[in-house]
Length: 269
Image (cartoon, rainbow, N blue to C red; front, side, top):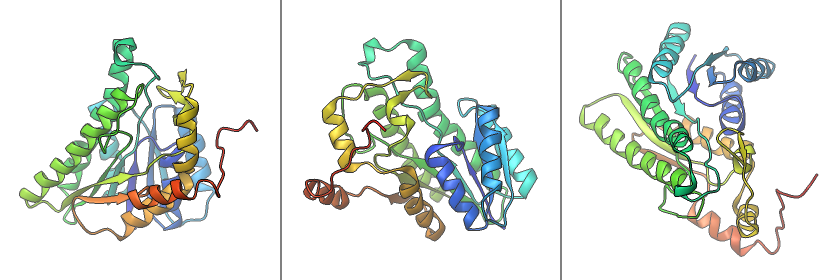
């Protein structure tokens, strides 16, 4: 039975991907920094149909030690790790860079960038011990394609760096002849608490109306995105894979048909 480790997976995209891996019979190791939320997510996953086991591991992706411990825990519990997904992330407050505190800057960079790097390192160290290797996936986001917007400079910088890092990491693995492979998951715009909350819910984000309009056209709920990404990961056998939900063609079609497909994710319920 195969095993997947997903960081930041107690809710949102990470949790939806965990649900789908369980439906496909995989063992799960989910991760988060809030023990109560972690226990609740694990309980919910175990209540879903699936033959695999589910474990939770509390730890921060900003800590290299926590990530090494997560990899060791998964390997000890299930014997191997087939897929590792660096999913944990936080949004930045809707501010210009000079308006951010040093603590806010550190939080975004530590989780969104260093978390992906340290997570990839921890996963690779474990997978190098496995005869079959394994797959490591990092999550792209706004800025990965060089998009820029006031209030998303730091987040976009982190995600652009994650894209470069993952491509270079895949090249390193190939040049070393490793059986470990790395790839990128591009979820597009997802409508979650992440959209309107910064720094893991510590600060609200007031989105401009023009941004809401774009999100209503291009956005999707995480379960929809997760279905595409998990299907792609299950089918992938290549290094440096890029599994993308919101392709350029799909985005263009959304804008062309927006007048006939009205959506409002931000309407009061």
